[in-house]
Length: 286
Length: 272
View 1: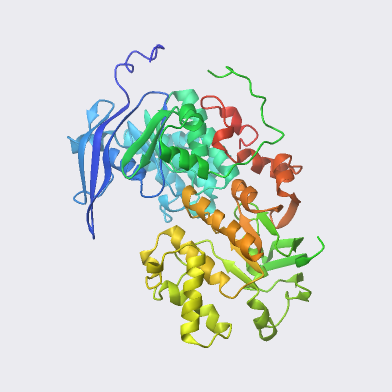
View 2: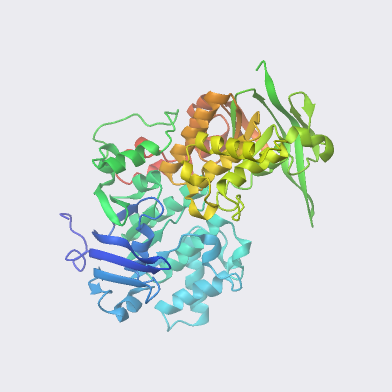
């Protein structure tokens, strides 16, 4: 990091994970789902864990947030969120969740309570951060957040229930709820996997816009190499609980070193060239 | 298209709702040659799965024709449909929900053989074993039940079951969308091999344009129940003419086609 960022920030990464191991207690015995991974996420950065089902990528994200069931998951190593070790101190995890760090969950259709209005659920998230606000103030802040995630006419949507929204809109509402805590770090667990391609494009654009504007850090979990390539600064390729390869997004896709990464890339069906392809101008971006 | 296996003409499918009939498929038409492969593309709710279910006559169309090898099956009563059912088989989207958990792989694949009139038990078992071998499952798979298999293996069992009655046409409804990319690539490879070996025709329902390019020679793009664009897959993907097809093409992210660091411009035109 050579460029000058805000003075407060550049001494430490937002998220610093060192040698994280997670063992899960299952019916068939103890499984080591995450086997010694280390990575950091800084301000304005998107770092992606990519892997296939069972690779341990979601377990890593949930472990970082301490959202795995206590007693059934044994974590070791260190996870520092904005300097506080959430593994050593369970109170620290509670203190940072919904404030310093927020989660965008995977399935927008089931992540919200169907019996409460969207406004109520978004309001709860705002109140967690700002308990001093009045009901009207919470509502003002909430509608502003809904506007920020491009929900049209947010005032009229406040009292609507989740089933009245499409999947893409629900995912935007979940992003609004995640932003309610004014976090420095977003953990996005397959945020677009349940969405149609054009809707996915809209949600990814929103996340990238938010990052451009606010410098939020993101830990992205995905199995989609296209998504990973688009949004990431750095990618960690995960398999069987370990990183098999790590590096800048461009390098992972253009010059994969690990055989597993090469196999993954080879498995992605190609789309071929089309008439909107930009002419390749060398050095335009780097 | 000299040898047409399937011709769909002016197909309309409506679902009754409280607000009156909802038209899920609206005047859809296309042709599929014997041994050919056609993809139907669109996003959720566009009517593509409804179309697939009508083609195997799991539901009855409201109007229009589905001509299979000269016979219109759109309105055929079940009794007369029975002998034709063998010829069109389906591979379902969900490899977890579409197999009977109580049966072994061999029994699952043998079941359609019994319906097809293979009365000898050992002959059925032999053929089932052969089919499971054909889709690349090991001998040890025969006596195991669905729960013992991974998603990709289950989809192979589903394919073996569909092939059991030697169909002319296989309808694959999002057959690979629940699978990991590496497993998806294996299943797509298997489907291509089978087509080369047996000359079976495919109608592939998909939302992933990369998958469509891999498996189909022709494509039909649907939106809100209607066909918005149709043509050879390579042409449609290289220069789509309909604005909706262009939006779909733009939204499809091919990692190797992305350049620069976090290029938000890639998403231009899909901002909502």
